[in-house]
Length: 157
Image (tube, rainbow, N blue to C red; front, side, top):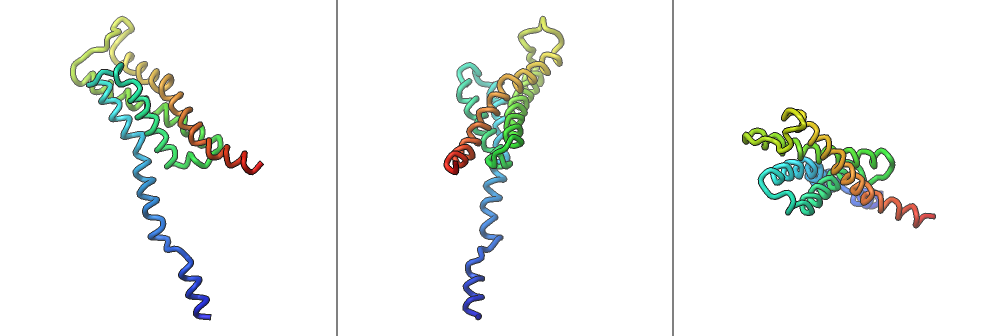
């Protein structure tokens, strides 16, 4: 009887040791999108965005992918899919917000002054980046996260 109990006790993994590395890794991954939003916003202000367009798109894409995965996006379902798309839009909007804040704080003006006051240009730039760059980035990340779920369903069928 004691040997059986000892065997059962040995087969139960310690929850503290088995969950801590996963929590730490997921905690780091959760900060992927906020980190790349700040990095992309700073890069767009001080570096040549045209030369860095593809690296910045990939950087933000991987940040959105990491954060969506850590937040549970790999489970599948429409809710996770929509969350990932919204995360993409929010990440690009945050990157553009960082850019606009740095741009205005350094005393520079936006180039298209004929479109109205500075604050409205900044808001429109933020919205445009969220919609036209963030939504496709979020869609791509959501599709990538959905591939394992679709493969699993196909193998069961």
